Image (cartoon, rainbow, N blue to C red):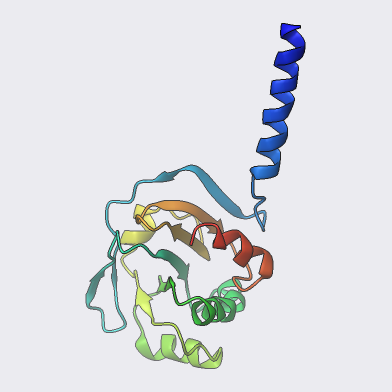
Length: 171
């Protein structure tokens, strides 16, 4: 009888876990079981002034690392812009890893009709090294406490319904 009770409990918990687990919307999202501690996030604004993100402002932050020469970056940037328009409670930081060139970067945004995003730089790769990036585009997702809860390696459609539904559980 104890074995039967154990099996029933095992099946119950296993079944509940499978139902409760939210599937990832894309294969290239890495969801951390426990968020990774992030000490601080410092980057440069368009005018190369230092910016430090507020860690505990209660907002989800999307740090998208990109470059003007990166075709996947070019493909995903409009969807990142749309995400920031539709969900202003999500703070989006597109971070260019090129050598700072305001004219080239502004043209990149203009050609893609990106009007809702600001331009940031990490030309010395301090943030890229801090987050141990392996390539671009890479997107780091920070939770409301400012810790990394997931990362996206490669291109995605940030405005895809599956992604937005998945992200809503963290907002």
